[in-house]
Image (cartoon, rainbow, N blue to C red):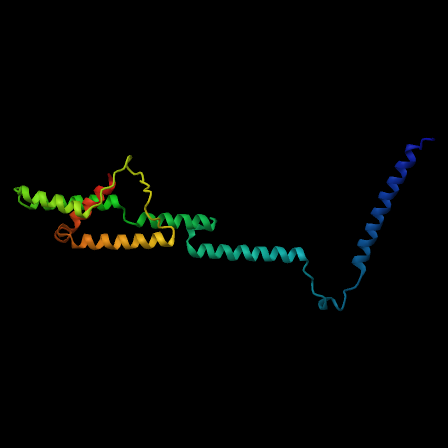
Length: 199
């Protein structure tokens, strides 16, 4: 094989570049020399598919941002699920807690004890204890705050169990309403029930 001369290749490349630049100059001159098209206003600029897609995306994003700003400005840029979680947490914080109720009931009972006479009869205490045993259902727990799972008790998750639990609770509720201690001292009985449940 015979090797080609390098200078001939360089000459070809340089001639191509020169011819390309000459063509560009000619096209620029032609573009400038053409008169205005009389039907130029009849032709509307056509929007490409990509431009349409970008316009739709930007319109959608702006609508979503307007909706999110309409709800609450503090929730802007946060996903729907996290907003739902935050709202649920706020609702739970607003709900009354059993501990707060127990503290307020203890304060009410302390105030009543101060205002009442300190001398109470022993038989009154015995009747109170008997009535308390009727009102409360004692549940022993191993650890405070743990839930005791009871076997052989109906489950609220199925229809039959929920129905039997409803019947039991209505019977217990009627029993509590008939109790004399509950009728005379409602908050005291409620406080005792909460204390027994916390044990």
